[in-house]
Image (cartoon, rainbow, N blue to C red; front, side, top):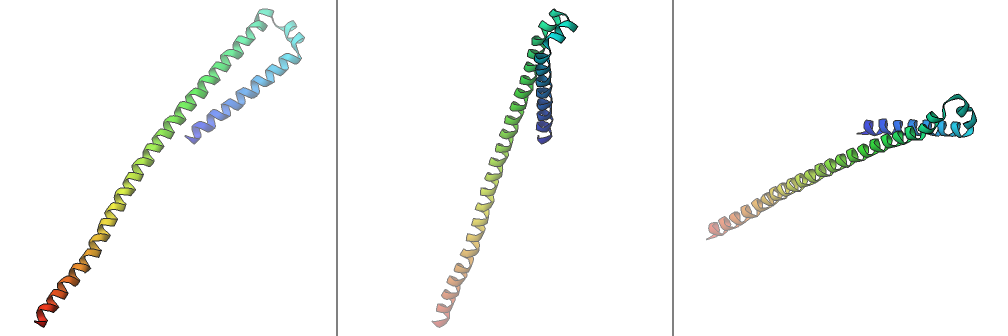
Length: 119
């Protein structure tokens, strides 16, 4: 998951830098661009930027969904592990109670035997 996020973040930064560079370049050199390319191509440029923006938005949505799925699976795993820990603690507690009960029973048997021996 970390590699997935790293790849997407690198893509976001690169695309953002490219868009910013070309946007600033076009704004500063509008007249030169208009003299070199047709006006119809220059007018289509915002459509390309919008398509790129939509592509990035889709990538971000995919990343968000993947992160939410990963978070949900991790939470489910944590809940399962917590249930297992509670179960193991219960077994350990029961085992400890059994060990504590055995010496008490042995003492009761010994005291009964002592009383029988005294009679």
